[in-house]
Length: 166
Image 1 (cartoon, rainbow, N blue to C red):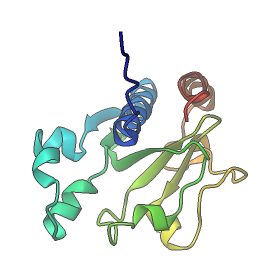
Image 2: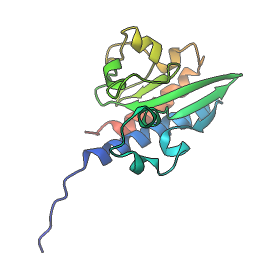
Image 3: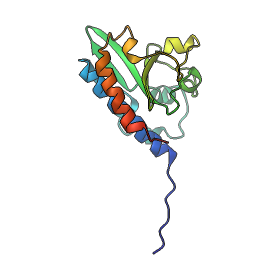
């Protein structure tokens, strides 16, 4: 029997990694007593992803760039954009590859095979970045005053799921 090896589709692989990262972050914020609402285009406008293929313009760009979550606690609300990067790095250039990012108050939560870090869009605009050696720990964000032990527990989940990811 002639078995054909199927070539891995990098887009599908990226979607799966992104969804795992989003699930880890969603459960982390829930465990920290935040109300968490899925917000990104896949959740706010189901089915729009296929319709936007090849569509250009500001509206399409803004829809594609919608943050993944809105989280609430103690009368405060935050846009959360979740990213996974094997190399543990995130820069403004990556965020603005489709043009200026329209959610200026967003916070970017970056999962890597080693860490969970966080940076604001404002900090990215100021030239700051997340890299392997920076100390942008999610547990150090003043916006959240979070439980560092809980975050460490979820960091272990991230390590478990991403340690062998290509």
